Image 1 (tube, rainbow, N blue to C red):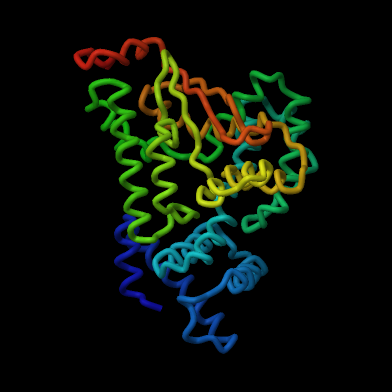
Image 2 (cartoon, rainbow, N blue to C red; image 1 turned 180 degrees about the vertical axis):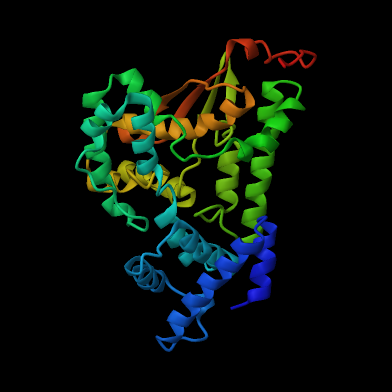
Length: 339
């Protein structure tokens, strides 16, 4: 294990003190696990099966926590072990969404409604494979839609189920405040996003869980709605970058194209299996997309799902509605922003 290099890597992610010590301890324990399998020199080449074996040990001991799994994912990223990085991130990405949905439902609809939806359901533990998650999602959505009216259902699903804090969006909020108008802000964000992808392609490093090449970069460059958004009237229209963009761009089978487009670990495998899940579950993704604007506008904004792979569309597209007091902050570069 390159402990010093990993320390520097974690420092760049603003981790210090106890967090760094805990990460290193977990990775060393993983290394010891591999040594026990006579693979003492292969931690940098560890495979997904090795991760799963170690994960089972942590679970048996009651230590399969988000932080421990994230430590292994970060070490895999540090060593540019792409297969292990993707596998680890897919097991922890959005793992808390269903638990957060349960919490938010109780807070917004009351315990009686919560019991109607989540009563008797055992939520899958952290580390559950994505192929095993859709069956829970299907049950929850059927109960949720039978218990709440559509408007309340959308409200609960879009209520920040990833629990991303406001602080995560403060740099973007500052950039917005320094922009000439909404269009200017969106234009600059898209330019920066393309530049990030260009750098990933050049360095051959992962963008979250996917590899990026020149074709992916060109797709995003020509799609200004992609991951950023374009304003039309009083709404900002956003599309997701395909989860596996390289495969998506070359796939001709519509079902697989939708599969490669989908980011959500709670429904993605349902596309392959043909399991029908209410497309309204995608209001969770709409909630993720609107979080930036909740913070920028200092109020909860409305977001609508316009297209989703769960309805048979080949992309996921959302509308973020601009609050009335900001509606005029869209045209002239000399307009004054609301305070």
